[in-house]
Image (cartoon, rainbow, N blue to C red):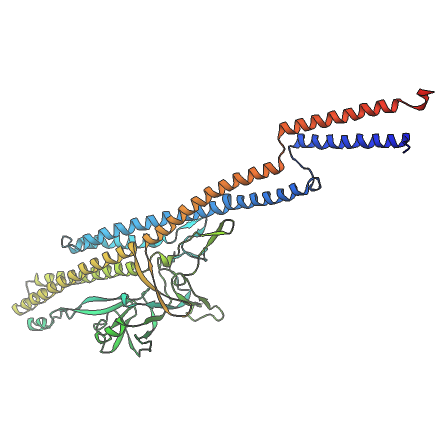
Length: 511
């Protein structure tokens, strides 16, 4: 084959350019410590680089943002639950003290403010927040669990499921003497106070209207009920007629007649519906605990058209964070799976019993004042002494009820800490039972926090692994890059030297 000078020159230039391009590539690898500068340099490395960098970006989101946010949320929740548990423990201790005979009425009066304050502080713990988001409100993180001020702007129609476990025996005073200037000793003797028992269910709120009660017996048939509205000031409020139910609107209590006890004991479901408009500071928002409907009210108390809102399934509002590849973690605890109103209603019963005892004590003081009047006749003095005796008997009975109220509050407070069964309506509208308590909620959030810590450790390990894989794929070893660059430079210089010698020789040199 004939080789011309042009062919040799083109080959020479091609070799020089190839060596120069290779030297430039090795220089860029040495200067940037990256194996490739463009995807076309090595598509395999480029594809792997995209994958590893994407994984590292996701890991950064999981570890440095999602997991940290979840950890902060759960830490704040655990702190709030721990504080709540401490308050319940102190409340329990006070109830134990209040249930003993060593406390006189005046001592219990000093407890009244204490009990009210602790009840308020426990509910304030339910309003704990993290970075402006309420912790126990489910999806409504911008809404507090409890009202922070009195509110009468809405009317709620609330559906509250009940169970036989909500039914308890309440001791109340029947009869009792009342001062009348015209009464004689024999009249007061006829007014001797006695204690009676009533079967009572406490609803979630006080000051209610329009109670509806739907009860299904053990076979699932509807039970026909007669409900009579009462107030706590009515003398017969705890004594419903046979086969009937008294609804004490101001205290939010249902009193069933004794002949209905067995029906309620074996009932398949008990569901109460009622209206509530006036909410006080510290009351829980109905939508956090119950299926309910709200409607806004005008200043005149009439419903505002088009403002109806329906709230359902408050027990199914889990907030989950993506904390790893294909892995979610629930970070919140709901108010309705932490504590309910049973302990608060028990405290209210104590406060009512305290007020009743002091009311009777005031009557005794008034009788003593009347007895100190030297102008009283012997008959009047005899009548007042009989009145005083009856009132002292009544005070003794009321103190006994007060001790019973403290004992009941002990049980309710301990149940709030360790576990209480509460009903809720499932998707089919059927009543189901779940167990809630502050301790269960604390344990739940604690176990999830421990799980999150393990996930964070795993994420840290994954970050190290993916970083190593990314570096092995992309990053050029500095020593290797230097050797490669030196070799490429040597090859380039050699090609220049060879080309220089080749172009020096021509045909004229041989003539």
